[in-house]
Structures are given as structure tokens and as C-alpha cells.
Image 1: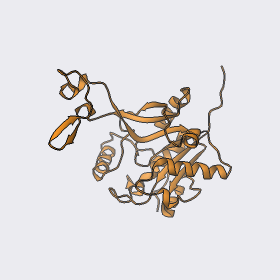
Image 2: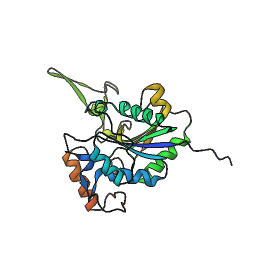
Image 3: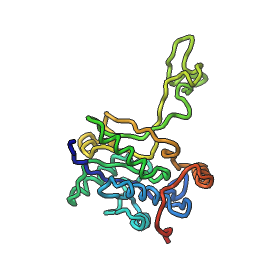
Image 4: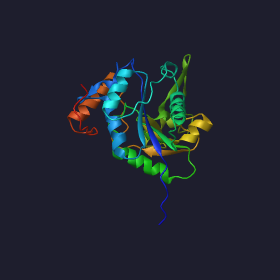
Length: 252
């Protein structure tokens, strides 16, 4: 049996301060702990990462993140912290700055705070998929679309056209039972893993060759809107979804 050395990997948890849809959502308490605490805990408990680093533009967020066991080696510059800043900007900035400090990693994983039900076991499952695939750039979490794009339309003036003009003239997708259409998946925000070389050489967090990671249950549930928050609280209350267990008192 050959033992190969596992590649080193850093967890990157992005936590911009402020949020328009749910104010300060990354640190808003969910079941007594700030939202970000669950992602830090899951990342640490997975045992996969050499470091769990939070990228934030706020010293207050940094203090909370450190309390829950993440490191915040520096505050993210304002130019990489806007609503429209692409992920590659802050990812490349962070990896480059860490490299200058003598910290290099073969891979990075983006663990977003808005997926509180992604557990350490979810991350381990994804990691096993990632390291067992040859010749890929990255892995990305996906789930089946709840609304099939074969039923979606583009409106031009007073006419509409199918977004996906597939199927036959007699049986276009938009007029077929959803069950008869091919499965289509949507990315969710729960996790992605990529080789660091993809960020540096291709200027991309994903590259071109991507292996799918199918999330199960509520692993990919994303808290983005106020009603998502209500759903999350209800899932916790009814025991339909479980948060990572945090062995600390809530941040003061």
C-alpha cells in the first residue's frame, strides 16, 4: 500500500462587515453564537486545514473570529471588500500576503459563513472527493435546482422566449414534465476547494476542470435573506438540521 502525502490546505472564511439584506449577518447570533462561529468550528474540527483564516475588513469581526479559534493575520483592505468585489481579488491577496510571510499551501478552501449547517463531516467528504480526483482545478458544492431552468423565460418587449430552447418542436422543455428533463444543478455557497496554483496562474478560484460535490440535506442551505434566517431558526427548533457543536460560551 503506497502512502502519499496529503496536500496542505488553508481554510479561507470571508466575512465582510455590513450586509444590506441581513444587517451584519456574518456575526448575527444564530442559536446563541455568531453565524461565523459555526463555519470556524466546522473547519477546525474537520482536521483538514493547516490554518483556518478569516478574511475581514473589520477589527470587531476579527476579534470574534479569533475568540472562536480562527486566525486573522491581517485586515482585508477596503478595495477588496466591496459588494461587487470578486472572490479572486481577496483570495489572491490573502494567499500572496501569507506567502510573503513564509506560509504556503497546496490548496485553499473557501468556507462561507452563510452556510451554518455545513459540518466538519461535510468538509471531510468534500476533501476526500477532491484528493481522489486526478487532473482537476477545483471542487464546488452543488445541489439539484429547485426550479428547473428549462421552465424559465426571457422577456423582450411584449414577447417571451424560452431560456433553454431544447427539446423537439412537438415537445419543448418548457412544456414537458419536469421529471422528464435532465437533472440540472446549481452551485451553493457551502464550500469550494481549489489548488492554489489555479488562483495564481489562472487568476480564478475555480479554473476550468471542476469536480462536483453533491451536498445533502441542509448542508448547502444559505442564509442570505431575512426569511432564510427564519427558516434556519425553525430547522434548528424542530431538529431537522443541526449546527456544529460549539464548546465555548457565546462571545461576550
